[in-house]
Structures are given as C-alpha cells and as structure tokens.
Image 1 (cartoon, rainbow, N blue to C red):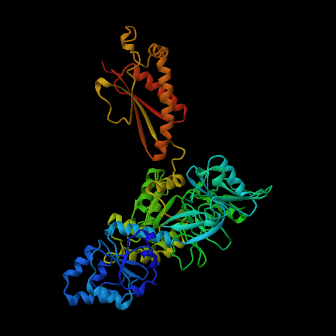
Image 2: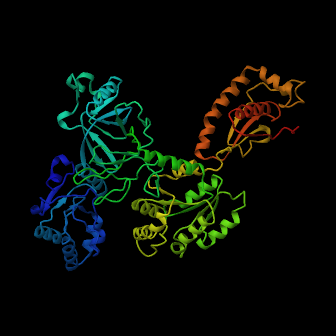
Length: 614
C-alpha cells in the first residue's frame, strides 16, 4: 500500500483513514467496484484487489438510512479488504472511516474520475505485479520485431547480435534478458547492471550505446520471435523454418511458452505429431499459458514465436507420417461435435464451401440410416454431421452408433472442437445467446458441465481442434486446407464479360475496366460490320501500341489479385471489359484477357453481352 502513495506512482493518492493497514499488499492487478457487494452479495469480494468507490456507490450509500448504511459497510469491511479508493475527491462516509480505523483497512482518496483512474491503476499494477524470469539469451529489435536469440553458452548469440547491430538493428539485452508477462504479452528488458552492454569472447565488455549511438539500443521490447541456435552436426535432421515445434523451453526445468494454436490429436499429440503440453496446477488449465515451477513466470506465448527445433525422435516422425496419411485419405463421414460455442457451425459452413454435404443436429439414432442412404451416392461421398448436446440422448446413444458405423465398414471419423473456458464465456457474452446447459444459471457453469459430460466423446475423437486462438477466417482456412475435396478443381468460378457502356454497366461485374481510350474500329468502314471476334478487327487492335501494353498491365494486375481472392474465400469473380457499343474493342480485349488467364491455369468463362446489339 505504501508504494501506491509514493509520488512516483503518479496516482495522486492520499490517505484519509486506516494507516495501521498500510503494510497490507495488493496481489491482483484487476481492481473491483463493490456495487453488488453493497446490496449484500459479497461472494466475489477477493482479498488482494483494490476496491473502488465512485460517485454511484457513494450515492447509493447516501440514500440508505444511517443504521442500514452502517450494517452494509460493517459487512463489507469484514470481507478482508486490501484497501478502498474513493475517486473524484469525494468524502467517504463516516461509517466507512470508522470501520476502516477499527479493522486497519486503508482508505485512499484521488481527485481523478473513476474510469481514467482504474485504467492508470490497472496499468501500474500489471507492471509492478508482472511475473518475471531471467533467461540466458539475447534480445534484439529487428525491423521492429522483438527477436529472442537462445542457445547454449558459446554458440555465438552475442556475435550474431553484434552483426545485426552493424546492419542497423537495435540491442535490447545481452547475456541476461529479464522477461515479464504483462497481460498476454511478454516484454523483455535488460537488467540495470548490464543495460546497453554486450560481452564478446576474446574482446570483453563493450558499450553499444557509446559505440553505435542511441539509435542502436532499446530499453525494452515485446518478445515476438524466438530463434534457437544449434551446432551443426552432419547427418542430423534440422527444422530450418521452425514449423515442427510449437513450444519453446528456455531451461530444462523452466517455463514453456506455447507458440501459435496447435491442433491436438486424440492421443495428446498436435497436428504436426508433437506432444501436446498440458499445464499443471496451480496455474489455470488454459493451454495457451506456460507451465513453470513455483516462483517462475507463467506467460502466454507470442503468436509469431518459432524456433529451430531439436532433433525429432523416430516416434515423432512416425506420428507426423500417420497424420499426413490421414489427411490424404479424408473420411467419408465426418462427425463434428464438441463444446457449445467452439465453432461447429462455422466448421460446417466451411465444409459446405469445400464440397461436403452437411447435416446439422441429426439425431444419433438416424446416423446409421443416413450412412446407408449415402453409401452409393456420388454426390454425397463426403458428408459431415454436426451432433452435440442439443440432442437429449446424445451421450447415451452416440458411442454405440459410432461403433456401429465402423463395424459396417464406413470410413467415419470424429472432429472434436473445444476452446478455453474464458474464450467460450466471452463468445456467449458477445452473442447474447444462452448456453444450452445453463438456461437459468451463469454460462460458465454450463460450460464446465458440458466439458465434463463430453469427456467420453472426446476420448474417441480422431482429431481435437482447439479454436481458442482462431478467428472465423483462420478456422475456415484450416478446414479448407485439411478437408477441401475440390482441391483438384478450381476454387474460383472466373468469368470475363464484354459489354457496351451505352447499354449499361453489368450489375454482376466485380471488376470493371474501361477500354474506350483505345482507337475505335467502328470508325473504319471495312471493320464497322465486324466484331472483336473477327481476325481483321483483332489485327487492327494489335497494331495499336497501347493495346499490348494495356493487356500486359491488366494481366499483371489480375495475376496479383486473383490468388488473393481465392485465399479470401471468394467463389465467383466476374471481370467486365467495356467499350462504347460492346462489339469491337471490349470483345477483343476480353478474349485476350481470357487467353492470358487460361495460361495461368484458371478455367475461364467468356461472355459477350452486347455482341448482337445494332
């Protein structure tokens, strides 16, 4: 508490009561407004949090009778409060001052309003209470990206960093990096003793700030990329891109940092064959967080982290080969299940876009009958079924039904979707939809009940997909990558249309290009009755110097944007080429553009809308 009163905190707090409790500590960075507790519900009052009393709370207390106000404040003060902060410079009730003095609860007053004060206090507490670890490594700022270079002693981390500094990049810390977790971000900095200095073998300690100037150093930087330096051994396999490992372990007994969003298999292995890490108590069970021994730091991994992987075991390589084989021979019947709010609907939509026939909420008892119906159907050779807790007898019937499918020889598999509790809770809060198992209770209770109930289903899943770190677009991309049965077909229906501006711009055109700047064959008497499909018109257009230049630039543009439309998931693209009447210039250019795109491998549909116009 004494630290909060220091002028260096910048909070402008002053003590008005409870000086005997200044030795109490604040252990949580999240502050609390005890509005609900003033009405008598004190279940969520936690020791270690700062309690904020603003105008609304004090206004409510003023409306109470003196006896009722004293009883409410007496009950609140009995809940082991770390301290109270009164905002806007308001006067605390006399009853609260008396209880604070009697129980040794500091009461602080600030002239700031509640919202900006809470923001400033939370930022200060997050910085002061951030968990820390010291790591033998080098932290650099490379083009604004925080790069943590790790490796055994003497492997050349400092030499690598010095070469980066020579190339204009910036040093944050050498030899010892102090890493703090602030929110979901890892911030690296240098200890005061070694700040701006670097130790080079055979040369000694040098001051980077003095040698290269202030533009070559930074005091702190977010850790976004981890590079592990390893000694080269002939015949050893190396992962040069960092695609095989999703975790970084700074020390044998140290913190593990999850990188990205791995997809876990049913046996605890992710979609690249790596062992899936499960955090141990007392930390929360969220897989995005690190595991650390007592006193070490727990932190969320930076999403862009990667590393040069250690040599993979033969078991890992066999697991990867098995999973790759599974992807090549995708299941004929894919059963999608999992936790409510984990993204089953979005997965079904992505599968439909990828050529699957999808059925949502099919009763489990009808699944074998459905399988018999599609056995000989070429159109339904890839079917996906969404089943979950919405069905009353799902838990009872589904395991038996699934075994029955396998016994009949169907290539059936289960995709189980899940997410962290806090992510699911946020999704239900944002959509304002009730959890199916928590109609008259908080959503978190339904989430926990459903997770526990679905454990038997999760055990039989072929693939477990954690969607906590996925956006809707990333989830769609993952499904398209792994389950797209149209991989050999064009993912985009591409059409090129010529038209005449005098008859209107086609409403279906996504991209429109005006070619009226080119010479018009309509003014050549011998070409007027012809169209852009006739050889004389084509030869006339090709003789114009701007024609070839325009077609080349248009081809370059379309070659750039079309793959990005495909990546974004666009299914149809219509390119409109327009001239005055839609019979000469636009027709010739449309045919030329279609020919260019066909050479890139795109199937093209060409239509000349106004070719028959007078």
